[in-house]
View 1: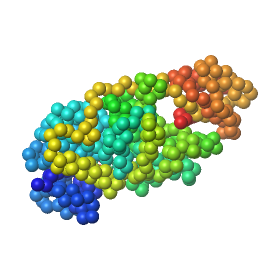
View 2: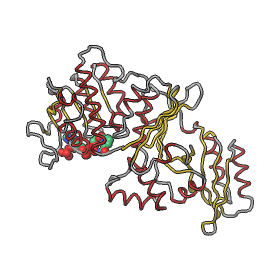
View 3: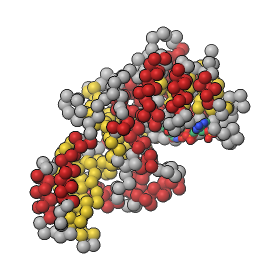
View 4: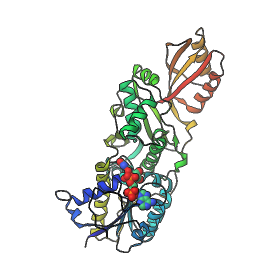
Length: 429
Ligand code: NAP
């Protein structure tokens, strides 16, 4: 008997998924065993680019998740509600759930996986991070015997497109954002992307898988790219770096007791594997023992790419259901129950790039050095770069320092008579 899907949402990803499932010849043979049984939408009059009979398409999404005939609910509607409640209802009714919804999983994953474990069903989410890039199942399966020490990535295509354009064209953020919105690469309300919130959802999900503990989304430090200027991109390039918005989850110490999970624009050395990921592409670098480094690269969004990820979850579930075993497949399930403790950003040990505008030049660099020294900040490089009108511009890159100490030094420097302003402070990988 065919496995019956109830799909919630027929937008970009829903349409791509239905197209892929309908065009199944020459793909995996298990696709023949799938029936698109119901598809839930908001509007029945909207033109659709896939053919579905009027019995399949409905606006009653509750009926789909409560229909005993539905085996798998595929949630592709987005947003927090009603998506969260519909998923929980489907789980309570014993249905497996597939979702592309990073916002719901990063915030309510604890509730959803607890419910799924109790009901004995699977919740799969390959499309929630990295669009078409297989990264969730690799973390759960192929890499699962490794001790993961770091996961870092470019997980938001919009911001990578903006930063790439700023770098190649020497343009300012606002101009590139306006262009990206015209071209459809950025939303009319770009907040979730440019303020790092979308990347925060994704790194929270990756961290929970790689470091075997649930992550409280509110503990993930998120800083976006609005304050990145073409001036900093140019200085970074001169110093051998490119600026990327990175989601980073890593152990900060040898005994793995401190876990940092954060999103911020970062100066990445030109030689680093993530430095060459440009445009709307995504890449995720995973470091583990014994494997070393693995980088997964590909399209982070788009109908076809995301449909590929959703369909891989569908096939995984169909194959599992067809094997007729009563024991759950522990490589598909989410097994951890406890929450990981996240180290506050003030405890992060990292290098910094900072740009200062000073009123007079005589002795300023010396005073900066003394103040930094008082807080244990040592400088890797100091460059007096030029002038902005009457003001002299000084750029420093520090050695590794505790973020809290660095910030205290900055507060003191900001109060110095000779310092006009500190236009930018960025972390360095
Ligand atoms: P979308 O184009 O806005 O489509 C949303 C679909 O859900 C539409 O068909 C809409 O119905 C339906 N819908 C939304 N709210 C509904 C409600 N309250 N009741 C009934 N139907 C409702 O969204 P999308 O871009 O496909 O994204 C879907 C999910 O995939 C999101 O969680 C997103 O984060 C994730 N995702 C997207 C991409 C991507 O490239 N777009 C990549 C990775 C992950 P109507 O068609 O009638 O309006």
